[in-house]
Length: 189
Image (cartoon, rainbow, N blue to C red; front, top):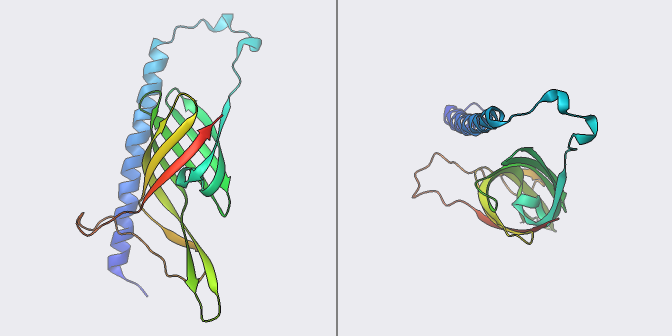
């Protein structure tokens, strides 16, 4: 059935997401352009053997940054302070991006599994899995251990038919909205 309020809510969420992604993208391009202006390189001196191959860093851990339960992510650096990642976990997965504020602190945005639950049927409990958009911040220690705190922006039932969707309305007043907060713990090698 058509409901104009739901449509407005979804449009507001989409507009906010587009604005956030636009600001994030502009900051990336501004940083890349500044790096290119300071780079002095004679292209005739570059030899194929000197070209650096892209490196992938791996992380393993628990939490939404790793796809829910125990998971592993492959992290690819796309700019000096920006990396994209994807991973698989037990009963889930994740894709996202990280912006490094400095060597140890990184802002994190991802889409992935952010909740599990069981719905009671008259005869059995059924597993239900939720996924959605998550934002947070991580601290990665020099030894590779990372600790993160994430909050859920959206959460939708993606598996299981026993529990209704627990959509979160980010347009509610802050007093009415209590976001889910998750801790992530991992190790980068």
